[in-house]
Image (cartoon, rainbow, N blue to C red; front, top):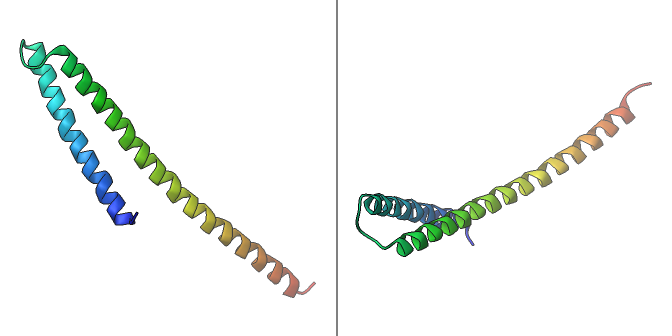
Length: 95
């Protein structure tokens, strides 16, 4: 998946999750004040909200871990280059 497309998809899912969370919160307040949805529908809505939030956090966590692996390879290569440089400097340094 294209990186910018993935970021747009995650952003879209986060916005949908926020809107759904606000909607469920309003329905809970209305239920507390005496009306609106049945209790079962609110519980199912809150479970879906929880599942969606967990999935979104998992996607973000996977993206962060993959980014760190990329940096690890770069730093490993940089460390190898530095070790070769030190060996070369030691070999040409007069004793």
